[in-house]
Length: 183
Image (cartoon, rainbow, N blue to C red; front, side, top):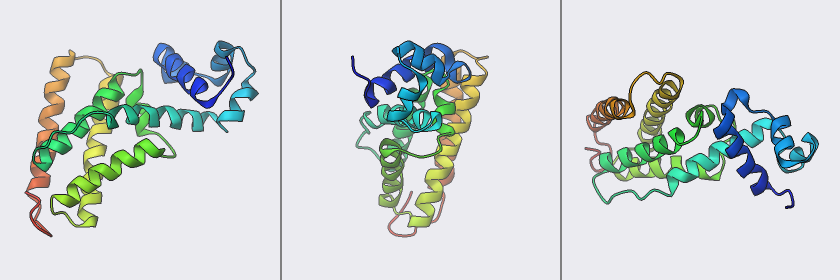
């Protein structure tokens, strides 16, 4: 098998799922692939670039989820739930996404989609951008904590996450409409 960016990325995802972010190293990845560490840098210029690609892959999984044809709060909630699910499907997936240095195409598409949804709901550009930031900060913070401290059963964390998301969305719904009704 020849070493290509998709091969390196797939192997990195598999290794990260097995050992987590703290146990991951490019040396371990190179050993798994049967190459020297320098061979990885031919495809990804740094460990951080590779981790950013993994984060973008995770966000890409969320992009594949269908968004219901409902009102904007339900659509936004669907997007947020899909990204949370993709993050939680991978060891330290939330931390990878939340600490990504350079957003890739999937990450840019996801946030543009969320901002566009909020703008279509009647929020001006400034408000839509900030609302998307609030939603993603809630998601990232909750999911990182959730993966770091697995003290509750998944059903309980789902309920708690849903409650918090409903609170955030209710706050966003209460903002004054700027161009046609964000309610």
